[in-house]
Every structure is written in structure tokens, then in C-alpha cells.
Image (cartoon, rainbow, N blue to C red; front, side):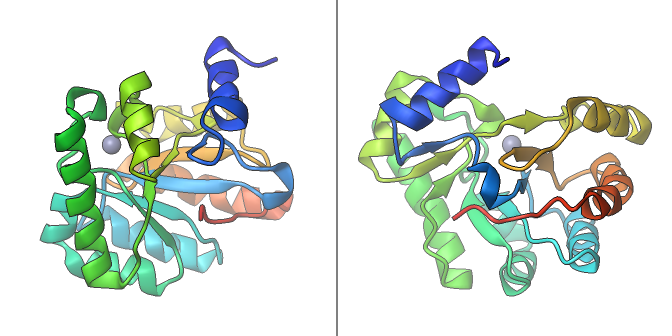
Length: 210
Ligand SMILES: [Zn+2]
């Protein structure tokens, strides 16, 4: 049974913001691993190694100023076939930005990504997932596609690998899910080292968000 939040997200995707809000994929598409807050100089390369080892492609929602610090990592993400989206320039919640600030922030982030990789992304993951009606309508007017998630395992708690693995197992991952992770910490890396082989042997298929 869907929670109230899930019903709200489904209403946005299926009806109110059709085409510009996505929180889950059709089951036949497989599931999508997504990584926010990078690129990180230590953990992004390690996660890329892990994904490559398992032949899994993911979607990275990068922060503009982190890209400025590690442009070579953005290039690596793109060259290894992963999808790239925006996580804003400096990780300010979009609900705290006025219309002009939001437009400028998203345009600046998109420009940085496109100048480095040639990828002109319209995908946006809002920092902390925070959205409200004005920000959703602004994003739609600017023709961005807001990507939320259907599974989070609260890896931002940074409370250790074992608790994170436990949450991933209990909350599950299925075809059609968009799973939220952060490529900026050891616990996410170590939990994925445990889970990815299990998901692959279960026959789960992975896709990128386009
Ligand atoms: Zn974030």
C-alpha cells in the first residue's frame, strides 16, 4: 500500500506534472541507482570502479561547485556511460530560491556540465528532495525534469555500513524503483559492495534516467 507521500508523488508524475516530475519508472525499465552530492574525490572513483565491475550504469546528480573542484571526475562519469543530472550549483534548497535565483542557479549548473561533457541535461534532483508548488511550477516552466525517488535508505545518516545494509535489505529494491544514494561517504560504498552482487544475482536490471 502506498503512503500519503507516495500517493502525492504518483499524482504529480501521472497527472499534475506529467512529463516533468518522475519518482519511479515503469517496472519493465528496471531500476535506477542515483547518486547525489558528488563528485567526491575519494568515494566517486571507488563507486565508479564498483559499478564498472558489475556492469551497472547509474545516474549522478552532481553539485556545480563540486564539479568545479573535480572536473576530471565528471568526465569519468560521462565517459563510463552513466547519466548526469543537476543537483544545483551550491546545494541550496530550491524552495528557498526565488524565480530568478532558481533560473540562474540551474542555468549555471547546466552550463558547467555541458561545457565539460557536452551533455545538456534537463534532469534536476532538488537538494534534500525539498519541493513546493511554486518551485515545481517554476521548474516546469523552465522545462526541467525533476527526478525524485521511490526508495531512500537514509545513507545521509552516516551511521555505519551494517545499519545501512540492514535498511537497504528491509526497505528493498525492485524493478521500477529510483533509489537515492550519496557518493560522498564510505558507508554507501561499503553497503553497495555488499548489495550490488546480490542484486545482480537476483537478476535485477539497472537503467539510467533520461
Ligand atoms: Zn544533496
